[in-house]
Image (cartoon, rainbow, N blue to C red; front, top):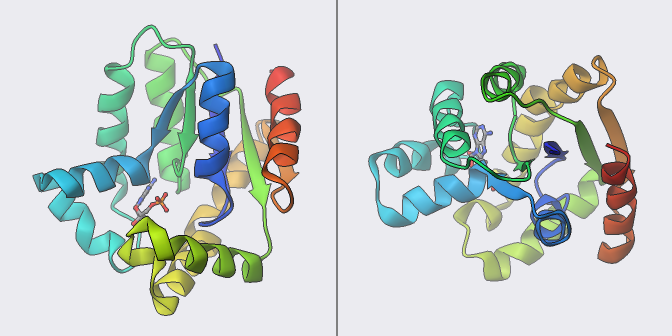
Length: 190
Ligand code: AMP
């Protein structure tokens, strides 16, 4: 069983690479951004709560995210493992994830961080905004806020895994298939 944290700033390519990884390794995709968007679309209470944070590019409070992930893990028994995409985004979330996995007899195999320079991120997100229908992709100020939130609140999560010897950085610029190959080499080593 492999449990992978796919890490990186907004626009790094986590969603794109996750899709390919699910297919190759039979892992269960757990994207907290996708789960929130699903709740939003269904008009649930959780969706309404998350919307005010998402619209501003801010993080949804830890406890809300953690409970949602706990639900998803508990309801996904008998899977080959998870790809965590967009989670954990704070050290508190990373600690909670370790606890949750331990309760289910699992652990994180490693974090794979996609490295992409800021200017390229902004271009990619704006391009994605033309078709993604995501309000948070379509406004320069919101894009800047999300990158700043990543640098201030999320980047420390990399240290959390580095201290455990579970951190691997991969160049996230280039051909999608080449990046995928490099990620696969790391996953195959787990
Ligand atoms: P994403 O699709 O991963 O870019 O997430 C879109 C938005 O959902 C983020 O800008 C946050 O507002 C919210 N979100 C997603 N995942 C998390 C998380 N792990 N912690 C807090 N907020 C999150």
